[in-house]
Image (tube, rainbow, N blue to C red; front, side, top):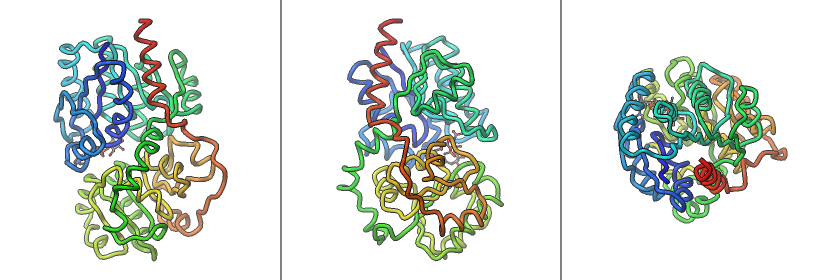
Length: 358
Ligand code: UD1
């Protein structure tokens, strides 16, 4: 039996790292990298550090306008799918690479499994929300991280082959945090003491591609008397320059870094006083480490983190961000644990049963 896994962006490499280990215990695996992320620090470093098997194919699509990028990726995959004839295609999360892989599989009638199915932010202005809905609609097996995700699918009439398996990102944190504690030197390199700094990231199109939003976020961060570590995504670097915000940021309390390795990010997250982010993965990681999270978006698909009081939605609103930095100090119990660290094992075992019976 042959499984073909499609990845293309940084968070997908992290998810693949844990799932691939389980898949390879039972099946042959072919990995297709779409090339959506291509910088060394956004791609190669993850394959190297997390010992992910080399991709069998790299489509090298690079950056492009959304529709063109998806079309190019899907077309590139069609030829590979014809040659490889996989029994099942696995796609992860909600990026353009996810949807392209799903479309190509569906075109050839190949069984499609979606990891992180059923997540909804209910904000269709975000490309990720559209990617999620479309991918779930054409998936044959839907792996949900949470009960809310299962309910979201039910509301859309999707009930067949829906499994609550936990979250593969929690598998990944549990597997890697010990190794990161041993190997990461990031706190020393940045001269930081534990719990003495904030950690911030922003890269979503809604925040970077609108001058007012990125300016509001950076203004808020610059105006407070705190050390803020700010790993800069290439998209953000491009827009900081374009909006002439780069010099202002350089001469401020903000400690800019290039995109960091997974191990360094885990250590920075665990030891931060608070996390400010528009990333979905970091909201969950903050919750896992019990670090208060201020989300730089008006909606989230990780609603449990907000309902439990550990995450607050501040959007790109300067007063809200400043207020949360000062006053948001959650202490409550956490009701959702996103699984017990066995999501990848659960997924591989369900795939096994599905392929045997098909
Ligand atoms: C994508 C995902 C987003 C995810 C993120 C993880 C979509 C719609 N969005 O956004 O959900 O959270 O990945 O990081 O798929 N760039 C580089 N080098 C790279 C990659 C990107 O310079 O290696 C720059 C390019 O200028 C490019 C821009 O970043 O135009 C945006 O890249 P894009 O492919 O749109 O993805 P992300 O913004 O990273």
